Length: 322
Image 1 (cartoon, rainbow, N blue to C red):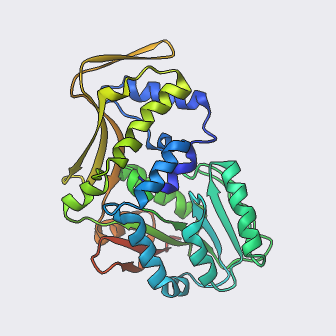
Image 2: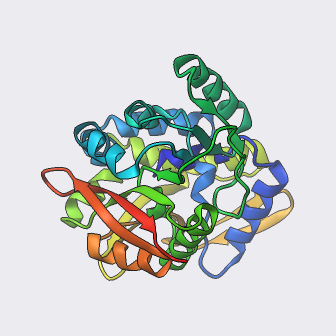
């Protein structure tokens, strides 16, 4: 669960949503894309999750940013064009904007146009000397950056929230290569990653005692019923989380409690008792493991910062590849 993905929903067409649901439920291993968690209710529930005692990710990353922001800004340098992937409300980014010296431009990238433009307007008021260039785009595919009106020293990408962890390793590697191509040589990447730790701590973050995460996960079925005319009996599914130590990841499922049939716009899907629908991966990394993966995309690690318990890390990497 990462808020950086949250605004993928509002500009996703109903047809795209339907196609993804039908495709995901038609395979031998049923799955639904996590980007569809975040309708209005889902986003509100995620805000609640971020305040839970068990959900360490958001507050830990924020702690790191607040304590080491001057070092991060020094690493990134002056006169950069700062690009944020999945900017949302750009809350964490404001700390970075204020710390960077002579920022040439800030380019928030998000797929939700209305939210993006509203946030950009508020940032223009707050930072009148910074050129704000919002870009409506899906950052998981190739796109072109707008050209700032002032010269830039390099392109610096900010990718917070451990969003990279939602992608399987092959897709995460592809994302890093995409960033490297977008920036060119000497591009800078500041990225948040969740670190491997006691599995009980990780599982609790995705299966809290108040069942807010369960409600968040099940809301995806409510959304399919509401927007696509599905007839899921939501009470016949339960939220299930497991940690896969071999792959170093959390897997989140919606598990059917009985044999049942679900209809969505004339299509029928069969669910066996105990069958799970995968709704999210969240990969956890080691510093060395992530550095190796980033190195294959041309990035070299310059510095990293962690919290005292080494639960989370923010890494600064530079694209060294000619």
